Structures are given as structure tokens and as C-alpha cells.
Length: 375
Image (tube, rainbow, N blue to C red; front, side, top):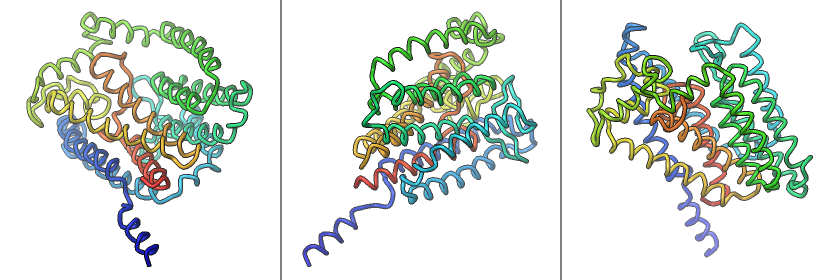
């Protein structure tokens, strides 16, 4: 009697969804709905004749994203373990189709989307997820030999190199940087020797510098980042207008829908630079709320990783959390002029299907790992 009663009480306390993770995510998505409409309505009216064009598509993405979250919440996270190598293969195939098939869609000088009918899919977002699953599986299986260079370090860096070369051909330097950072974090957490990681940094940093200065458009972006006002008419245009948006917003903002920079001044106001629109219309107060919500998501993800029931779950939770966190930091850093311009969406807030679906699926997986550890 006492045992069954205790079990019933424990079951009643266990919620099917982690509210500490779910609430901030849903708040971010809800704010995103409002800000996407505000940022895109003028552009949508001009290009498509309807100010609701992007909003309606985003609502479809959100419904699919919530569905992905629910499904992934109830699929045991160990389900992904045998899929590690098939996911890697799918990522390589996606990037190959992007580069060498008619399905690749070029915009803004880069080929980063696969076009299927009326849908655009960004393979680099999927590659990030595939890499996290692969690293979590491989590192957890090799724990006894993780400190051996040829086992714990080299194979994972080779896989990273393959994906990096393919993504640099798009070109997509920003996604490569995030993928490399996620890989290094997971290798460190997985127990790879620090001397191996340090040596890799001695190789990666000069390589990144070489790629930066030997591509004319990247060099211009770097120069405009250092002094955007001297390049306000070309490479510094985005940063200048983003900073103007934040400056105009002040403490409380101009009000939702009353921003000025989104009116054909700030490029991609509903995707890469939605944070700038938030800064202008919601001000510092709105920006702090957004940062607080992201901090809650990342803190919960770290807690889940620390309490995961096994090494695979811990590494997977850490990888997914790190990927989201780095994308947030890079997007905000670009909008605030703290990093060179990179075309990366803001998770849960920016317009776009691939990023939102994978971000919501990642949250569902985190919830499943947390539930298995009693969180």
C-alpha cells in the first residue's frame, strides 16, 4: 500500500514536458510571430502583394515545429544512436545536391538552400544536428580509448573537415565556424586530450585567417566590421543600419510596428537581422527579455546534460545546447556589430523553416533526456 501510494505521488509530480524549458521556448516563438510580421509586412506587400505572406508561412513552420518537439519528446533519445552514420551520410548527400545539382538555390552570392517545389531546405542546419548525434555516439563508445590520438581525436576531426570543405564551397563560413566550435566543445567534454585540442586550434586559427583574407568579400566584411562607417554604402551597410536601429530604440523602443530601419533599409529584417528590429521596436527592455529567455533555455539544457543518465545522453544534450547557444551569440553579435556579418538566423525567432524545425526538435530531444534522468 505504501509503495504504490509513493509511486502514484511520484508519477503525479512528473510532468510530460519540462516547463522550465518549454515556457521560454514558447515565449520566444510567440515573440517571433509578432516580430516577424512587424519586420516583414512592408517587404511582403511589395514583393508578394500581401503583408501576411511571411507570417502565414511562419505559422505553418511553427505548427510543424511544435509537432517535431512533441514527437521528439516521446522518442527515446537512444533511438538516434544507431542513426549516427546514416545521418552523416544524409548530410553529405544534402550538401552534394546543394553544390552539384539543379536543386541548389543561389541567393546573395551563396548557394545554401535546396529548393523542392515551394520549399527551401538548408542542409547546413541538418549537418549540425547530424554531427552532434555522431559525436555523442562515437565519443561515448570510445571512452576507454578516448585519449588515444588516432581513436579519440583524429576520426572526428576528419569528419568535421569533410563537412567544412563542402560548406565552404557554398560558401558558408559562419556555419563552418559554429560546427567547428560545437565539435571542439564536445571533444573536450568527451575526454579528448587537451594537448590534441590545443594543437588543432594552432591549425584552425591560421586556416581561418587564410580563408578570411584570401576571399575578397570576407576581407571586405572584416574591414567593414572594424570600421563600418567607412563602408556604410556597401559592406558596412548592414551593420550601420543595425546599429542605427538599436540606437533609435533606446530603453523602451519605438513600439511594435513603428520601427523605421525595417522599411527597406535593413536587409533581411525578418531573418538574419530580426534582433535589430526587436532592439528598435522593443528597446533595451525587450532585448534584455529576449536574452533572459535564451539564458533560461541554455541553463536548462546544461542542467539536463549534467544529469543525463549516460555519457551518450550527456554529450548529445551538451551538443544540442551548445549549437543553439552559439547560433544565438553569433546572430546577436553580428546585429550589435561585435562580430563580422554572417547570415545566421536567430533560433526560435527568425523566419525560416529548417532552423525552427531542428531547433524545436532539439528541445524535444533535450526534454526526453531530462525525463530519463528524472527532471
